[in-house]
Length: 356
Image 1 (cartoon, rainbow, N blue to C red):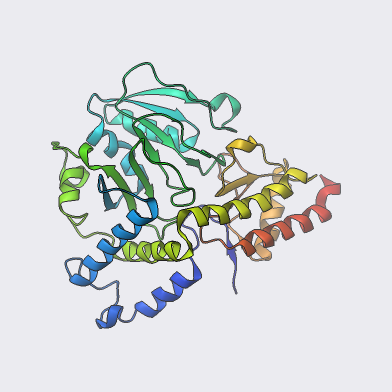
Image 2: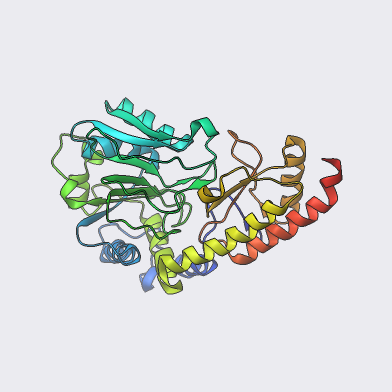
């Protein structure tokens, strides 16, 4: 039975990628070994990781000024690792757009970093991306969460600020951002780039300096070892490389953003005209990848989620902090998935709006 998986992560993979994984599992590149068995010191894996770096560099139009690291520990580990590596004065700025921005702030503070909140949408229940002014004080960098998975908001364009650090975990390679003012990009792979277990860090090479940090947190050592100081997440990097190739074949980030806008617009157009469902996010702040909505009645929301699952539309339950529903339309979600969701939304509304 096929389903449309709207999970916030880990999320669905492209069908062609899953099929390639199936073909490679028994014997990768005719090696007689599964890709899950090959040594990370072998030429087989060197080709995988170097190919993945090249494909990612091509998709983002990265210059040689940036280093790409394939790490473990999730984006959460990077909340503290990043400032420990690049916050020279231990003073950073942060834009508060919701749960994951707050988590990044908390972890940085635990690492002894002073964090100034330079803008926040808390007073509006995080229903928008706040306006940001150029900070008056000197800061090592400004941290932005580009897409807020729980609240359903995102930056349509990056603010015109210098020294940005971007948590792109939930819209990585899903939107075509201009990266001239970006010092560092990071995010987990399990939403748009592959499977759980891999974290990407892209950092300006001039920011990689000697520190006395433990080796596994030390960007200079990790870069010198080509992300292989210890055994890397071999299978996760292999899966990410397949997704990167898939994205390149589609036409790159501009093309996938266009597809994501088509999918999300279809759903948002329905919600905007619905008499039962509502989306409270300011229109210009709406996420392309995480669409939040509700009926306003927790019991009816629960019924919707249960009935949707019966119709092969799975993992639509909203985050526990906000309730309601959430449809994650990541890169691998086909347009047909958005169509199936809208068809079911229409059907459910016609059967339930009178009892609201």
